[in-house]
Length: 219
Ligand SMILES: Nc1nc2c(ncn2[C@@H]2O[C@H](COP(=O)(O)OP(=O)(O)OP(=O)(O)O)[C@@H](O)[C@H]2O)c(=O)[nH]1
Ligand SMILES: [Mg+2]
Image 1 (cartoon, rainbow, N blue to C red):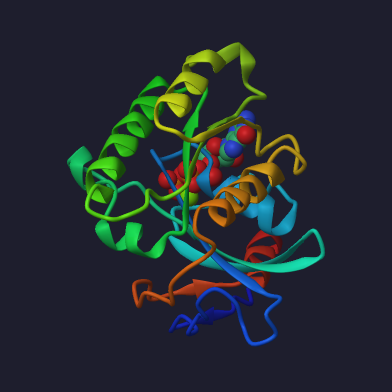
Image 2 (image 1 turned 60 degrees about the horizontal axis):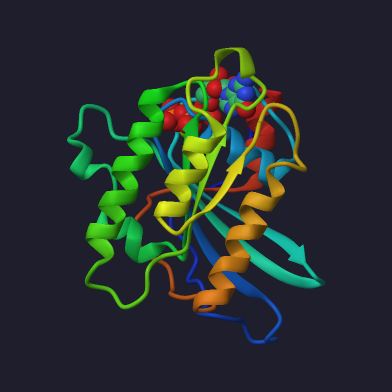
């Protein structure tokens, strides 16, 4: 297996790079384990659904075009910490890094919906001292598993509405075109609030590239 691993994150530019045309945006995926955070990430990066992803936490870098403008997406596919207090499931470091947050639950897993509720509250608490709230979207994944649905669309929508977030129900397994609006929609929210921000945080030991994802699939 050929896996390209960089031991240091690159020094990201702030809002734009020198040519004033490339925008950088940091997106953090949160949510309980097994809800499809990695599946959504890989779908967006590669248009593919691999099936099994392992429990790897990574920041992926991906350049996409929206309305003719290059957007450099840095996507932190997080792991829900094992045996942690719910109050520790989002870190200040993650919030400092993120321009926008995707909160993922599985529509078949009520406990995962409760995790998102807790994480929304925690983000509000941790962000209360900062001037502007981080743009967020709530995502109910595994919409293809209707027969196992445990969380209604209405509940998801209400949670998102009460937290001032966007809302999507998607299936990472089924289609790319359903997943794309999650990332592009969040980017629009970020753009609408404050543009994009920050340089790198020296937080992750590893940055994996899209080619690493493909290599994994072919393994
Ligand atoms: N049916 C169905 N299965 C899905 C979907 N998305 C992910 N899965 C499956 O759900 C399982 C967990 O997916 P992951 O993407 O690894 O979930 P995760 O949230 O990254 O999990 P952790 O990294 O362990 O926290 C895998 O077996 C996926 O194939 C979906 O939309 N529909
Ligand atoms: Mg994962």
